[in-house]
Amino acid sequence: MTARRTCLITGASRGIGAAIARHLALAGWDLLLVSRTEPTLAQFAQDLPMGPGARAHYLAADMGDPDDVDRVAAWALTRVPQLDALIISAGMGAIGPLESFPLRRLEKMLTINVRAPYALVQSLLPALRVAGTESPHGAKVIALASLTGLVGQPLNSAYGATKAALISLCETLNTEESTRGVLATAVCPGYVATDMTTGITDTVPADTMLDVEDVALMVVSLLALSSRVVIPTLVMTRPSPNLWQA
Ligand SMILES: NC(=O)c1ccc[n+]([C@@H]2O[C@H](COP(=O)([O-])OP(=O)(O)OC[C@H]3O[C@@H](n4cnc5c(N)ncnc54)[C@H](OP(=O)(O)O)[C@@H]3O)[C@@H](O)[C@H]2O)c1
Image (cartoon, rainbow, N blue to C red; front, top):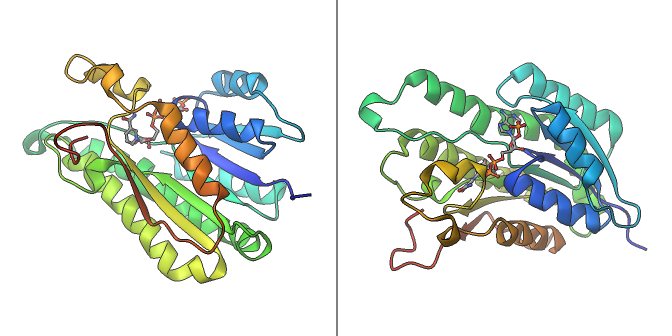
């Protein structure tokens, strides 16, 4: 019998994080779910389709608040000595021309998209290292980055810079920890049809965006791999003559 695996997901109540949570709940994972809005998160956890042995715990916390990030890490460490997966899906998106993009927005995005993932990985490393040595899958850190972190796109100077930092964080984590079985992947999708992209459906119709289920399936596949393969960056792009356009 395989041991039940535990996964912490930030940004778990909607969009990509929610789709991943649904797959893992059905597969019997122990889930630690995080997002800001407690009633939505509680309802989401209650409605999850639970496979045999699955459990879902939740904590409302804002990844833009460093104290909340510490609270999430402490909560996870008291619950589980071994963390098999950390999925970082909570993120802030905002676009605008570089010439006038407000620096306060950039700073907020850096806090949510870079500082919080960095702090979570750092604090949870002891529990990830346990899975790294105990599980044939190792421990997986999967961060939802973006195609814009790999290739510059107009109006994405701030968002793209934060996602580039996240890609770098995953890559460096691999250089320091992969021999201990802690493996990181920055998943880099183009536009995905979620709440985050409802504002641009006039220019990019939702049915031409990536399907959230495909992103979730890709993440689930990464979790199924053994600890003998490192996938630092994973690009997911849409059918188009220009594969590097979000
Ligand atoms: N959609 C895309 O086109 C796309 C493309 C590439 C990469 N990504 C990245 O994929 C990730 C998920 O995006 P998505 O499209 O699934 O977004 P979404 O549908 O807007 O869902 C965001 C989730 O994160 C939570 N959240 C937002 N801000 C948070 C914060 N400060 N602290 C804690 N939780 C927070 C939200 O719940 P609450 O609001 O209740 O907190 C919700 O559960 C993001 O990092 C995004 O940058 C998205």
